[in-house]
Every structure is written in structure tokens, then in C-alpha cells.
Length: 284
Image: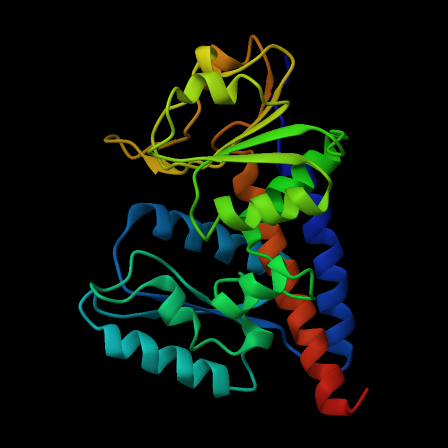
């Protein structure tokens, strides 16, 4: 079967974003993204580097606020300040966060118009209700990758492994909106392989290296690997054993699959947030 390479799609989205950034520059608007980081997590550091590289290409300004992993109050204060800063159009808060501070609690301090990664409970609620909102970038990237591969989602059986509010739950909502039949698996799911083998579309988002192997996949399925696990030697590995699965199904690789599309989608959201803010400030 084939590998679903996300890099050409990410490049196409990036070109569209760069055009929008150029248009906004003509109006005197510089789209900007601020990232609040309170850990030395390798996966978060890798994501920030990819954002910075893509931001340079699209013309979106990046700002990183590095805080102590014990400074929960500092995280909240930074998010409040950035929300009030008119020069900032998008805000993300990277995990892990200081003890006692959940992403949902932190994201409540991100202004709704700047919540470009759909992290707040308000954004998730609006997504569930079918109201306008920024969807989290990773689930949206999965959907973009499926669309680019011309996967028929209407009536398809989709299985998601992972129920986080960052990927699993919002992706289930997005797939339901595409008229797929959706099952969400998690750590308490019995006989995981029996469930996943039903899937026409299987999304692995459990954060467990090589959790999904050939026994979990039916022939002809489409498998999207959302895993970003850092191995002992510093390499990025997914939740899918790609070598074992590729003989049966079309699969997105790690790295090079969902990751670059996630970055591209997030920056597109920043440009859209900047455009929305400019319309609001100009009364348009």
C-alpha cells in the first residue's frame, strides 16, 4: 500500500497562508503567534522548532515565552497578558504544564479569538454544537490529510485510538460532521484489535510507541498516525508500526505525515485570526 506523505499538502497550505499574510501586510497587519512553554519536553521542543521554520516561510511572527515547570501562576499571567496584547493574534499553550494546572484550565485564559489551537472548553463546546470555532490543529490536520487522499468519509467506519481533548474527542466531532460512523477507543477498551480491525479509517492518537501493528488493521484501510513519541536515541516515532502495517493499508508516516500538516493548519488559523481581528478593528 502507500504512504500518506503530508509534506506536499503542508507546502500547499503554507503557500496559501503566505499569500494571506502578504495581503494583511499591505493593510499594515503582522500576524503573530505566541507560545507559552513551561517544560523541557522534547516533543514540545520539536513542535516549536517546526513552527518557527514554517513561520519564517509564511511570514508569521513567532514569540516564545519560556516559564518554569513549577510556575502555574506565571502561565496564567502570561496567557492573560497575551490575550490583552493587540499585537498577538494567536496563542498556544504547550503541555506538559505545571502540576495542578490542566490545559483546559489554562486555555480558559486565552481570548476566544486567539485560541487558534482550539484548546479552551468554550472552543470544544462550540465545535460540538456545530458553531464557528477554531478546531484543534492536529485533528484538523488529520481531516485535511484524509481529504487530500480523497478518502470517502460518508458512511465509513472510523476508529480513533485515544480520547484526549487535544486529538481524540475533537477529531470524533469532526469525523461525525463528515457523516462517518465513529468509535473512540481508550486504555479501558477490551480486545482493542477486534475493534480497530473494523475500521475503514483508523487513527492512532494514544501516545504509545508502535501500539498499532498488523493485527490491528484490516486490509485496505487508511491508517493515520498521530503519535509523536521521542525514542531513547532522540528519534521521533509514531503509535503505528509502519513497516508492519504498510503491507496492508495506506499509512501516514512519522515524521512527515500529520506533523507538517498540523503546523501548516495552525499557522493558517493564525492568519485567519489576524484577518478577523483586523476586520473587527476596522469595523468591517
